[in-house]
Image (cartoon, rainbow, N blue to C red):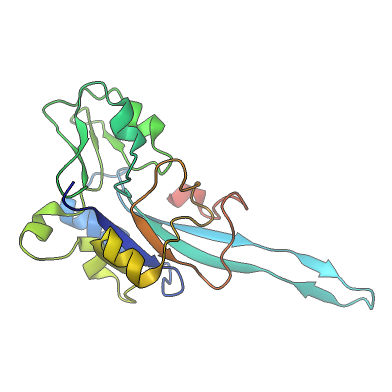
Length: 204
């Protein structure tokens, strides 16, 4: 494979404004209920009472913006019975509408809930890395819209060389499952995978 495009996400810069989410829905005119990029809120910690009667706390929270991670080992591609879900020459996981039968196996297999069913057309949909913008030298809509520049994109090897090789953080699943093309700059209060649920489940 010639390339592997990836996203870089800096959790220290994300304010949870959801401009990335809105930009994606606007560009692709997504129906209500279909959201290719979502912003999860993680919060954790606890209050403890000290021996002198005072209280201490380690409460913290942060946001994680996530879409399809165009994984190295995409479970969605592995389970697709028709070949509709596939990786192109740039490492982007795409859906071929002409082959998709709407079985939703990819939706169930993906640990990031990236593939989403379009009930109107009866096919699966997902983040396509704004391949049309990339072809013209532009940026994915989510990256371009982020006011705090928490999102970036590029070739995976270059992003890893620049930012490191962290690919997981709570509340995301373990990177061992799919080897996601998502490079993360951890929030100063970041929690390990499996530490707890999202704080805004109705939004993600």
